[in-house]
Amino acid sequence: YQQKLSIIQELQQQATDIDHANAVRTLINALPQEITVAHEAQLNEAVTAYDRLTASQKELLTSEYAILSSLADQLKTLLNEQKVAQLQEKISTLPATASITLSHKEAILTVYETYLAASSDVKQTIDRQPLFKAVAMLIDLQIGSLPTNITETDRPALNAIRYFYQDADAAIQSLVTNYKKLEQAYVTLENAPLVQKANAVIAKSNLIPATVTLTSASIIEAARAAYESLTAAEKAFV
Image (cartoon, rainbow, N blue to C red):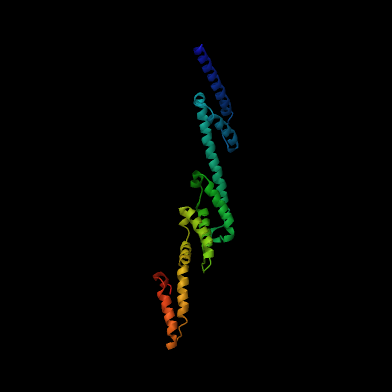
């Protein structure tokens, strides 16, 4: 009895496998020989159905899988070509590098974000140079717009520019010409406490009259004491 039951169960499983395989075969056979991007949903349905089959069910679709795999590769190529064309079109709308101003920031960043979200295949296929030049120019303009007298309130703006630069493609970084100004701005911020103390000493020194008399002794001594209280780094700014 057990042997017969086992045979029956095996036959039932085979019938189930055939039914599931046939259902997927129907989906694959319904696909056109010449695939286009318009058939993406139809192809995805067939691929999803195939992926859900068991290993034994997939074995019943060897030739059909070859067809499905080939069509999937063709569609991937077509979709990449479409995305390349769409991204290239967006890049072509950007202004010439020499004409870029900060008013173009949003437009440039929108195209750049689209580029970052693209696949590596798309990135390698498009002509990226116009986009990279635009992004580099935007960084240069943002650095150039920093105030002459940098203060601590400017640190968030400095950080935003620096982080954007550091995250950018190396090819973009190589096109940025104004980055040393940003680095110098950070130096100014770091030196601000030193400069502040040095300026206090300079203010005391400025109290010393042009013509020194005995009554100037206390003023001179106060200035000297203030100077000597400075560290070597602070004295460098006096």
